Length: 231
Length: 231
Image 1 (cartoon, rainbow over the protein chains, first blue to last red):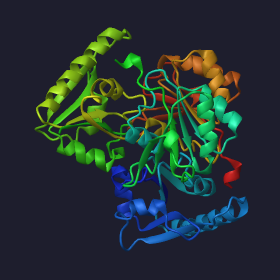
Image 2: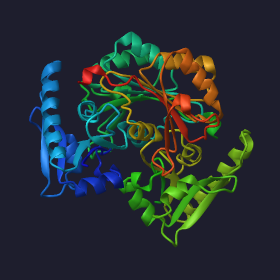
Image 3: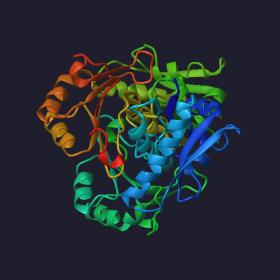
């Protein structure tokens, strides 16, 4: 019985891959991954040194659009290609940046295939704790709460959620940075901007110094600072 | 200049350690970790196969009490032992289950030592995404929000936070399980109980079937189920 693996690769530094991910990818005869509009695959770039030279690669090319149907059609095609490999008796390893179940595109394949095939998820290091690590910002201790919010939410929802949590991580910042900056100023909080955490060109800045045009792979962390209980 | 490393080991399965954690622990001359009341260290048990036979081990023995002062005194002593090794020119690797900055005891050492010594945090796979992986429960897709709550919070706060998030993870369940179960029933939600995720004796159950006396290393996940947008 062949197995579909959704494998978290961690945030970008290939050394933040788990031993289990390394073992399964090294041994894989078939690997699959999404690419964006024919470009490079970030997930594949993380695993590039581990994929066997003779492995077959299934590229799932996602069109650059916010419309629903073209992306769905691309995942339908990718899922069919993966299913064909599984039906032929091969395990298939799907490469996922970060963790497959934490804002990962793997969920589109999981929704299509997990009912029909044995599916194993290998968790990975998330951008969430990587950003905290590279910024030297403890996220949550003891009885503290953490809220993870996509920057795409409307301003009122974001403001309310930020006000009611101890630590907050805002994902998918991109063009929403001015909105987030205004909310954080209104609430008189301080925040840190992190871009491409763990990669050679990573950036860690006070939010006030962050670029107006943030890339998609950027995050804002709001932490309370050192918990006095800890010392 | 010696370096203090706070190294996330992942949730328990030694294979969910990162390659970076494996490399740094293998090479370490001095490793430090907390133990509870003279017992075994969970962190050390994850790394046991990786620690060099001739490494020096600094045990930080945390007394079994909820009082603040005895634990603080134990971390003071541990921090002093680590500082002495760093002053003598050795790097020190602190072993942390999960991720050092996600509800980790490493934060007590970070608060004491990071101002004086170069400190590097190596993020690890958290119990959060591991529980989702072993339960086959996607956490968050697209614009969904995630809230992480310690079960130690009061019932009103928990109820309010749970009602206002798409996905919720409740940590440190332990003896608080009946309180959580009541809140989830009141809100007419369904939830999954996970214990010792990734270890050989892991348990995944509907919350209704969970044991009354949950261990500390257990979690409750509340997810919305498959996002229809994904298919």
